[in-house]
Amino acid sequence: MKIITRTVWILSLVSLFADIASEMLYPVIPVYLRQIGFSVFMIGILEGIAEFTAGLSKGYFGKISDEKGLRLPFIKLGYGFSAVSKPMMALLVYPLWIFFARTVDRLGKGLRTAARDALLSSESTRETKARVFGFHRGMDTTGAVIGPLLALTFLHFFPEKYKPLFLLAFIPGMISVILIFLLREKKQPVSSLGKGNFFSFFKYWKIASRAYRKLVVGLLAFALFNSSDVFLLLKTKEVTGSDTVTIAAYIFYNLIFALAAYPLGSLADRIGIKKVFMAGLVLFAGVYAGFGFNPSIPVIFVLFFVYGIYAAATEGVTKAWITNIAHESHTATAIGFYTSGQSICSLFASMIAGAIWSGFNSQYTFLVTAISSICVIIYFLVTHFSIKKLA
Image 1 (cartoon, one colour):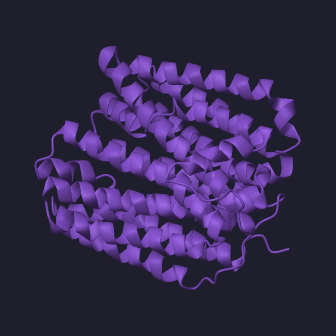
Image 2 (image 1 turned 90 degrees about the vertical axis):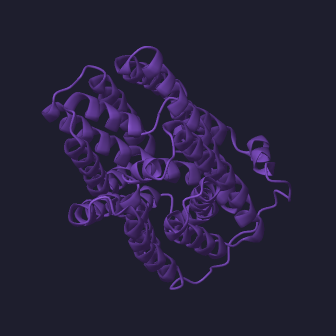
Image 3 (image 1 turned 120 degrees about the vertical axis):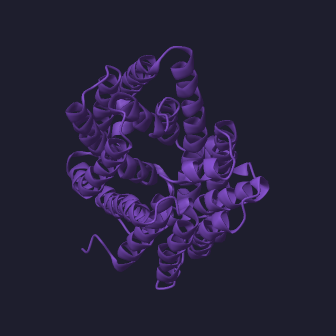
């Protein structure tokens, strides 16, 4: 049986080009916003609102996708929104317009995420799912390597020319949208959850399996202390004092993540999803403990290497685990419920990390996260037998 099908290839290439577009701008958006007059406080509000919008919309649009038994309209519209938001950022500099543009970008992510992951799930079996999600995640993260490199190259030759960079990012964004039209909609099971308002996807919790609820409790507890990678980059800058080393470390992490995602997905299919996921959590705890003690530059790169392995062992694997225990007609809703909760918890995680950093120091931020992740590991160990048969 062919594991990486034509549909998986196309969706993976779509994600690769979309991520090139996004990651070309990720390192420069804060600088650009400061240049056009945004304060750090305003940037925080902007990103918080944008991420919160994406978080809640993932669950809502996942449920709608299941209700209609359709995937491609949500995928096309989602990637389309994200593509057009790039030049919008450069078109006008009024605060309300910038808020609108960032919200459009994040709404695009909310539109497409659950439907895309449900389509990937339908292209795999229980025995190949971790490999399929791992392959897709690896291709997606390759975009996170290429994007910053393109941005750094452009800014090397054209320093502080941020607006043209936003326009250039529109090109890979549109390539991602065009590729989607190579796909054809397949008949999907129609959900029987019933219609409701924007928050009705929360009702899924009542009908979800016991295994799903136990799994998501553990995953969201972890997300509540897994703050933005920005804090790792801030710590790197604090220790090294170098923007170049900080950006290089970020690119290195994404490269390791991209290279390891498929092999670790393959390993999860062979020895068990939970074993690989748990190993990833142990690595995460070690990385955050390591960052808590002012590591040297060589140690920082070792920690980012391990962090890339952690991400490869958990991100795609988590999607595989969830879709393996969700009913076929509720796949997008199950993914949407989890990813919505994850986005909201991540927002609070970053707020908590920032508060600890400001109130005490950076060491406490990383050590609290490391200790919290150990508590989550214990939770999964305790619930081992109740989830094992479904994982």
